[in-house]
Structure formats: structure tokens, C-alpha cells
Image (cartoon, rainbow, N blue to C red):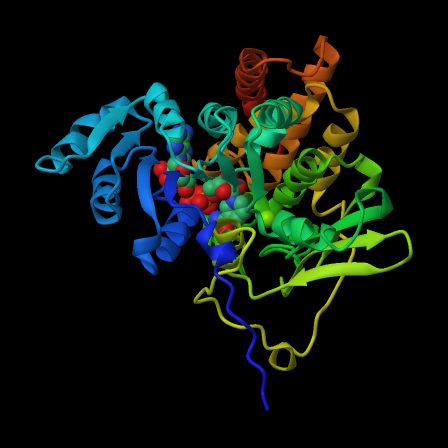
Length: 407
Ligand code: NAD
Ligand code: MG
């Protein structure tokens, strides 16, 4: 006789009902909306936000039945308002409206705004004790200790969405924290993994935007090409899991099937595997602590056949080395690193800086900041924002020289 496992409803009944999507129109926002659409009865959407695209946000707000929609850019308010006319959806604009969206009563908040711009709204959600599904890594790089401290004080639950960190989060449940020897984040290696340094110097924006495995927003796609993304992720992991720099490792794994590994002190290594589809880690956070079905392709290891691993190359990909330096230095260094990188990526996307100039500008900014004085860790959001602004200004000053050198 075959025994069918009883289908428990306990976990699913505990799944969140009210949802807010910060960065709703982006890649992660869209993947989250896709999961919500598949079971609309289970969720009620409180608020959605976007940067500029008022029309797209209004469409999404109507479709998901949100109560509040906010654009970061005040110039997009008129478009949002017009597109929402005839609905009962409230509209807001500007940085305060993003914070309001995060403060409105939703049990589960997807933090998927790109960059340090995410810090205030994400913190606002954490500070009212919400469950924060954290996709944005820049806010932890900018002000990680502060963020985690405030989230813990408010009794918030922070669930990692970033695939590697979600993998580590899952693998950590196999043992006790004190038995962890190290964790390993996998990196796809990006589109330039096999190129020579000479060839990397000549890559175009179009090539950098073509990630071999993941389909993502432009900022993280460029970060993946430089490997800065993995550097930011080391700092993200340091804060999420309270690990020391020497407990954090990276291995290049081109197939992106294994997302992260935890090594315990008995030599056991526990890994999480899955198709490279962000709907898997998002669903893990959405149903947590239960599991829900997703449309992601099921893993077929026999078809994949080969999994490869290699050391990251610090010569061709200096960004990872620079991020490691910031991680070890601590204090304000990660805040400076993140701000300089945001500037460098924007300049590369704007055609004003070559690809290898990205890491060069970040390193030059970090060097200059370290030489110029205090690198104390930000103790408040205001301090973090000030360091962020000053670093952006410094990077902008250094830009012409670096752009000329790296062209
Ligand atoms: P994206 O560019 O596709 O979307 C970003 C979203 O944030 C959009 O809704 C955009 O309108 C909004 N936004 C951008 N700048 C803003 C600003 N200054 N103020 C307010 N809103 C702003 O990016 P994405 O790929 O969805 O990534 C979002 C975050 O998730 C990033 O921090 C990224 O590192 C992280 N992440 C993404 C992936 C992925 O697969 N896409 C994986 C892991 C982590
Ligand atoms: Mg990742």
C-alpha cells in the first residue's frame, strides 16, 4: 500500500497575506508579482513603488489591487496620478512616499529597490517589525551593522532573497551556528569569465549587459560582470549571518546550480541547489517557513551533466579583491565602496568610463577616502547617508583622471 504524506496546512496558513513591493517594476519585483498572480486569493497587496515609470507602476498597482503606489521621482507623480485616475489607489511621490509605502501595514515587504536608495524605505519596514524579504544588498553594504541592529531591536524578520544568501540561510539550518567553519558563495563568473585581461579592457556595455545565466536589472548585471557583485555579497553575508571575513569564501561555478555552501567543523558541506531562477528564493521567503510551488524549471542534473569550479582571478577581476579589502577594513570602507561603485557603474552605463575603469575608480575613491581621514563606521542613517554622498562626490572628482587612464 502506498502511503500518501498528509498535506499539512499549518505552514501555508501562516504564509503572509499583506504584501508590499518596494521596487515593484524591476526584475525582482516582477518575479515576485508573478508568484502573487499565481495565487491571488492568498495575498493582498498594500503598496508598490518604482523609481520613475509612473505608467508601469499604475498598471501594476491596478492589476495587483494595491492601496498605495509611490514613485521616487517627483517629476513622475503627474503621470502616476493620471494613470490611477478613476481608481481608489492613493498616489505618492518622493523619498518620503517610499518610506510611507514601507511603513504602511504589510506583514511581508519585498525590498528590491536598487542601490543605497533602498536604505531608508527598507529600514522603515524593518523598524516596524515587518518580515523583510531582502533582495537589495547595497543597503547592507552601506550600513549593514546599523540595519541588522535596528531590525533585531524591532523584532523584524530578515529573509535573504539574494540566491547565494538564501542558499546559505537554508544550509545553515543543518547545524548549530558554533559548528560552522566557513560559508562559500558561488559566482557564475559573469560574461567575461574566460576572456583575457586585454580582451576585458575592450568590452562594450552591450556585452557587459548580457549575463550568461541570470536575467536581472542593469546595475547588478554590470556588478556581475566585474565580480563586484560577489564582493558586495561577501559584505552582505557578513551582516546577515554575523560571520567574520575569514569565514567567507567565493568559488566560481559557471553553471549556477549550486548557489551556496556551508562547511561545518566535522567536514560536512551542505549546499543548496536549484535552477537559476529567482522565483525559487523569492518563493522560499514568501512561504517561509513553509514551501510553495513555483513555475521554475526543475533541476535535471543528468542533463546538466557537468558542474565546474574555479578560483576567482584577482588580476582580471580586481573588484572582488577591492571589496575584500573593504570587508576586512570595516568601518566606513564598505559604505565608500558601495557609493563609489554606484557612481562607477552609472558612468560606465553612460559611456563615460571604460569597463576596467569601474574597479579602478572604486579603488581610487577608497584609497582617497582612507588617506583623507576618519573611516569610522556610520552609527546612524544620517551618518551613512553623509558618507555615501561624500564618497559619490569624491568619485566624481576622480572620474576624469581614471577615465583617461582606463580608456
Ligand atoms: P531593477 O533595476 O530591475 O529594478 C529596480 C527597482 O527599483 C525598479 O522598480 C526601479 O524602479 C526601482 N528603483 C531603482 N532606482 C531607484 C531609486 N533611486 N529610488 C527608488 N526606486 C528605485 O533591479 P533588480 O535586478 O530587480 O534588483 C533589485 C535589487 O535586488 C538590487 O539591489 C539587486 O542587487 C538585488 N538582487 C537582484 C537579483 C536579480 O536577479 N535581479 C538577484 C539578487 C539580488
Ligand atoms: Mg546573488
